[in-house]
Image 1 (cartoon, rainbow, N blue to C red):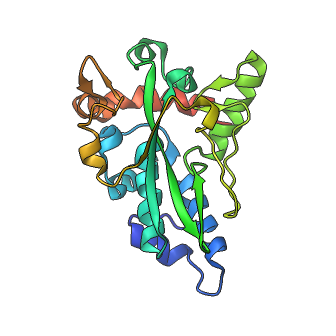
Image 2: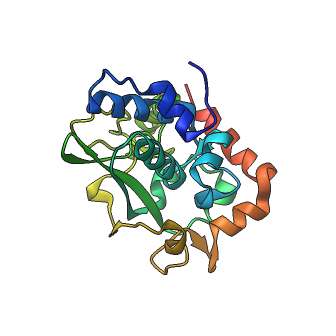
Length: 225
């Protein structure tokens, strides 16, 4: 399948006019899941959908922004929902020399999308399949429930008819911030957790640049199977 560089290009390539609303949503979901790998880019949460798509790497917030943009372009109604989760889910995915900098509580987002008149919550587009397989193998071998970006019981498949999560779990949720429409403004809000010593990771990663994020993504690549 050809890799496209625009949101509109994904929709043009993937959407089948003869398919159901649900089937097209699932096809778009699967494209984003596998063509934008889980990881980090140099704009962290601040990258817009086109930037994340061009970089080919993103984590929960930028991949949710991208997924929302793709589905909206295809005519679906979506909202980005923010919650707070424990950082333990990232243990092992982030090199130990940098993991300590992550606050104990991190901001996470998933997507709400209306499919055939019913609202569904989903974040299964975040974790690509090779990472899910490798991460769950490691968790099982180590007897751990969380780490490497996933839960031991995470899924990354979605049928368009149910809620499905690769990272979020209601039992893990520390705070629920609901639907956020102005995401850039939310990054300045005190509820936004992705900062250390008062400095946003968006600023830190921009200063680090691509060379700075490369070792983090290399560590994540080592987990993939």
